Image 1: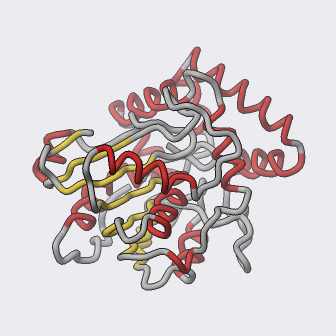
Image 2: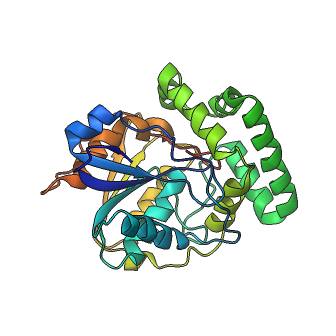
Length: 292
């Protein structure tokens, strides 16, 4: 936990691969916003025990367990990229405990009717998801090799992602602080191996284990218009499925723009009378099949 010790509690769910160390506002910023930010490693990442064959829906129980241990009756949730589906699981399954939910540069279910799921993604993401669907053992080996390389040379993973980024993302990731934070979260995420990453991909390509029409509370879907890791078509599709969801599409912004917009999203999550997020906000975090 970080931020205001008596602030409004907000769970921040990391991307894929990612960890609790992923980019977030400084504690002083969170204090000013009146936010207590709670981050944790999904099973298989960092120091978290693996939960093989977990579904996206299982995140709701994990979040409730943590909330109970902290004595929290109600809380808000924000999921970034690969954390987006898990945030929606909490909103659907945590029995009214989630006050508001924000999904930043999220993805839709792989069986989304009428959505060309891979369209607009980077070649690397398309290749990895197709390999996961058609040759699982080859996919696992590829992730193992990538995890090994990331542990030896954390900057290498950021460098690989840079080759696939649009200009808005390059501007975000070329900031030395953001680059360092991304490298740190990848190292922590993969320190015990690629297992969390493997299980995330499996969960995304399987049934999520809940219905989007069961999502409750106020929901904000924020997306960069130029995102090529999780394309904006996913957010538009989700907006048509989630009752009452707001959607904010940011022009001239891509995937890693979620890093810069997070303080504004947190303001919306904890406001007594939330107002729409301004459309001139700035660039997101995460990374497609690589999305913190």
